[in-house]
Image 1 (cartoon, one colour):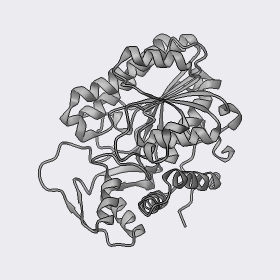
Image 2 (cartoon, rainbow, N blue to C red):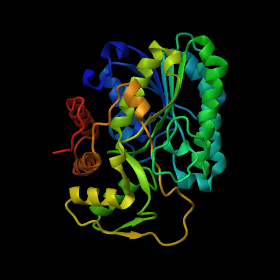
Image 3 (cartoon, rainbow, N blue to C red):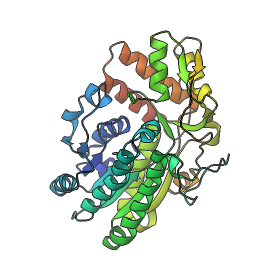
Image 4 (cartoon, rainbow, N blue to C red):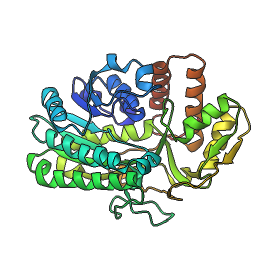
Length: 362
């Protein structure tokens, strides 16, 4: 994976803890770390059904712990037993609509859960770097069309977005109060709207779309005009791993917040993504606006990832057309019976082969 800037010698045999490893992004990260040679431990809730983690035999690919981040004692016990050198914190309640239904769960998992993990981590001898993953929604949204830089004001209208802004502040507090003094690198990573095969979460555009296409019915969309920074899951995961490498080597120099989003041309409305997915599915994009009142969601979300590109050498390699094509291809293949893990590995190998040039799928 050297073409991506990832150093196999750094990761080989490295003890790595991933929270949220049973989720969509966590499962892809687990496969990436496996291919880098890391010794991965996962800490998460049991996977939902269906789940990519289950499809790819995730329990056999890592040391697997089922635990709730809200259980401070259990989290601390696992972290102390594992003694990780690198931590990727992806565990979260990640859904905006669910956060409206249960804000207390959302804040307790995303804020207190982050505090529990970081409190446990600060007592680990040999820990070198922590990458705490939040979201592009952690910024106070003022409707700007230019991307939010890392020093933009934090905020969040809905409970999910606000909880992730709070998680950013918790991470900053632990970094300044504990990790910086111990020489441990702690950074937060803010990605755009991540798509790719294996996301089965409720109220997610892609999974709703591919199921509608498979069943030959129209897709219901809440906000077809909403603009988001779309990117394939392999893009930010590469950034997270690059960031961890740099944090381990220079904790003070790479601490803080980092954006991993697509270039401005890839910011597109929901309707455009549906059109592209449908075209790859060989059918007309049939969608209708979902009736009824819906909770507030931002009309425009944008990120400026100049810092990651200039300082980490991270580069978004897939166009929007490629990202949607790869996503549709994954679901069509797995729906047709292809092994999910092999589908992920094939796309990972294809991504590595792109080298340093962004290009569309064939």
